[in-house]
Length: 132
Image (tube, rainbow, N blue to C red; front, top):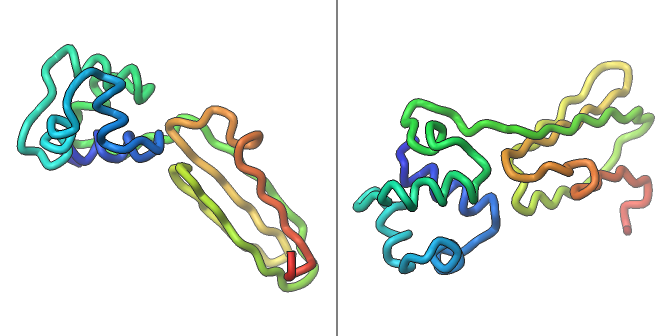
């Protein structure tokens, strides 16, 4: 992942536009656009601000050989007895894994590098009534 891709990933995880990120760190929207397209790089002060805002280390921000880390996880198991329909709204969540097992188990694991309160902020509810 390039520095620009990393900045864009974490910006979208916070559900910020380029202009909103620019306002938070005191630069122009065009500067953020250049960083995200790898046609420019932030100075050291802005790198420090970005790392703090994204809740990641400077090493993680600058590393080109990393996968986005999920600092927070929530794992939920459900016993299911019949075929279920469900909708998922991820919002700014980083990753969702859904596994099904013989024995009628469904395991849903949520991961994010931004959201500490996954179980509180992202409710997963299985419902027998398809119309709801």
